[in-house]
Structures are given as structure tokens and as C-alpha cells.
Amino acid sequence: MLVRKTQADDLPHLFALRARTRENPVSLAQLEALGITPSSSAIALEQGWHIGWLCELDGCYAGFCAVDVRSGEMLVLAVAPEYEGLGIGRKLLAQAVATLQAHSAARIWLSAVPDPGLRAYGFYRQQGWHSVQVLSADEEIMEYASQLAS
Figure 1 (cartoon, one colour):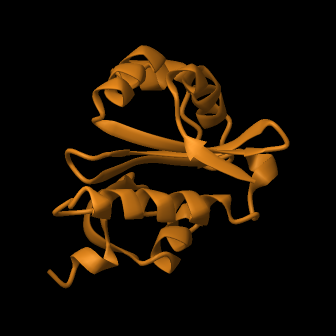
Figure 2 (cartoon, helix red, strand yellow; figure 1 turned 90 degrees about the vertical axis):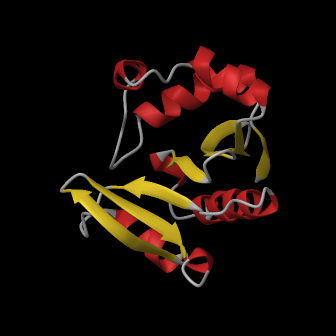
Figure 3 (tube, rainbow, N blue to C red; figure 1 turned 120 degrees about the vertical axis):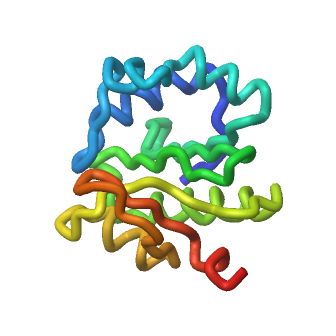
């Protein structure tokens, strides 16, 4: 298992992986409608606004994550269905939190779907995240536990 920083030439592969996640796939068209493209992501990486990591297993893209160091937001965490259950998500999430902490993020947060039937619901809570605001049936804001004490 190799975890390394995301580079611009990885982005097309990571966008394809994001579109085929099991429980919350997001297509290229959906991301583009939000202004998120491989090109915009490459600029964010180049400017240092976003930092990402990917996990490779046997030369295949198994998962990835990205953070926004300006806002403290965990932007995305995705694992390919065939690699679920191997600890990739935990490893990537820990790397993301450590980096945001190293960048002195005042708040480490993410947006998630507040559906207890989804794996992400329990996963984030088991990793020390807590819901701080439910915005709708499709979105809640979560913060990393160490941020709640401050």
C-alpha cells in the first residue's frame, strides 16, 4: 500500500474513481456543475490551497482524499469499492487531519450525508468526528473531535 501526495496528472484517475464509489458516487458532470474539474483542482493543488493524497495498491488507484488548508475543510474521501475494508479510508483520513493540524486550521470540518444507513455515517464518528449542524436530509456539518474542546 503506497500513500503519496496527489499530483495534477493523477486527477483524471481520481475523478473517475469518485464517480464509481459505492454509496455516494458523484459524476464528472455533477462535479463540473459545482465548478470542480480536473483543471480547477490542478490549479488549487499548484497554488497550495488544496493538498491531496492517494493510495495505490498493485499499481491501481484504490482511494484518495483532499483538504482545503485555507478553510480547514476535508473536501473528499473516496475509496474504490473493490478496496473497501482494507483501512485505506482510515489511513487517508488520518493524513488529512494531521495535515490540517500542521497548517494550524482553526476548525477541521467536513460536510456529509446524515444517513445512519450509509457507511460514512458510522465511519466518521468512529474516527473522532461529531455532528455540529444538520442542514438538511442531505447534509450535515461535522467537526473533528479535537476542535470541540477549543
